[in-house]
Image (cartoon, rainbow, N blue to C red; front, side, top):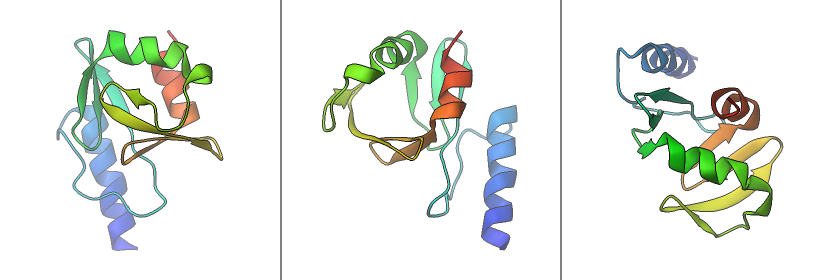
Length: 100
């Protein structure tokens, strides 16, 4: 559909730095993130210090549902999708971004 094409084009622009957030994320599609200047940025416009995000990433296995992480509620992991607040990230994407 056209909305899906727009979404993927906006994700490409977000990841390349042309835009700061994606305006529409279709139901069932993931969020993306990137790291710029020690800041973790998401497609929904959230900005967090990368050191805080990496610290929480290291303790992911111990985090319980409904626990607060960097001010957002951890909802859990299901089908290789990490859910926190209204964000849904593919675990593989976060591993690539944060395991370095």
